[in-house]
Length: 222
Ligand SMILES: Cc1cc2nc3c(=O)[nH]c(=O)nc-3n(C[C@H](O)[C@H](O)[C@H](O)COP(=O)(O)O)c2cc1C
Image 1 (cartoon, rainbow, N blue to C red):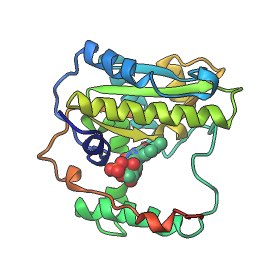
Image 2: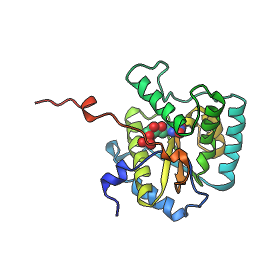
Image 3: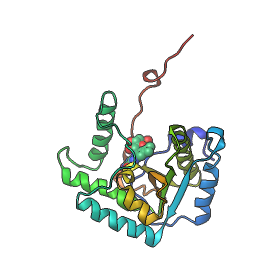
């Protein structure tokens, strides 16, 4: 049995998966557990779409084609700011360069960087793709609720021996994802997620990100 600490601390964004399918009951169990996430006045503002098989493959094919042509859809929201400031710029760079270093991709090797980014569209080989959306008229507070739900999905997945990678990459191709997945226009596509069994032999999964010491973000008051 995994402790809560192990479940949280041991979670990582996994970017290579085994070709093994995940039973529908397991996915249902994960989502049922995650639905215990809190939300302001218990409105439970999340919508989840589960893709496997042909629909997922069709989406991958279309997104690969779009990205090869350098095209992106009009964004529904900005995940990131237009302009970066410290300390986030440095942390973001460290994350990107760390991942590329693990993969032996040089700092100026734009082609291989793009190839790695395109793995997002293939869900890194995971058998299950999840999409999370929220009604467009809801406010920031409900996005906070959705974030807690998404983390709960990732932690519950660990309890089932599964791995995940949350993916905001899809927020750059919302129209395409929404059309193929069948997400209503009134909903905003927030992010996707790969779900499956970790390929422990793939070097990409040896990349472990660091965290700032708590002194950097905690203020103690008497
Ligand atoms: C909402 C969200 C969106 C993310 N989008 C992507 C993505 O599109 N592609 C990707 O490879 N990783 C993505 N990540 C993973 C982050 O890079 C990762 O969480 C961060 O580097 C910390 O690493 P860890 O998850 O292994 O602890 C995303 C994470 C979050 C929380």
